[in-house]
Amino acid sequence: MRRKNLVVVSTVMAGLAGIGTYLLKDKSTRGRLTDYIRIRKDPDPGKNETSHPIEKAGHPHPENTEDNKMVSEGAQFGVQYFNRIKKSQG
Image (cartoon, rainbow, N blue to C red; front, side, top):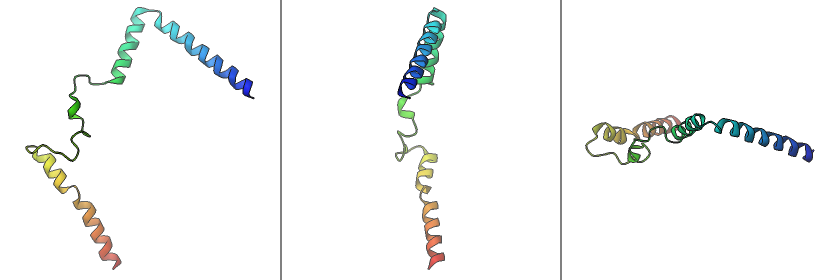
């Protein structure tokens, strides 16, 4: 069983190497492939890294009233739900 797996893995790896060689032999295809990989890696290269939503989570800018309102109201639903459950139980 182990030898069979080795043969299958070797055949797949050789096939992938052959396909890679075939695709990369032409300069235009190689350029398209590198562009595709670059776009997949960073879809918006001009985007400012600090504008990522996780970076400003919990730290809204003082002048951004929509974010401040959202942050200030964020816990209300959970508190109201908890209070409603407590009232119904006891």
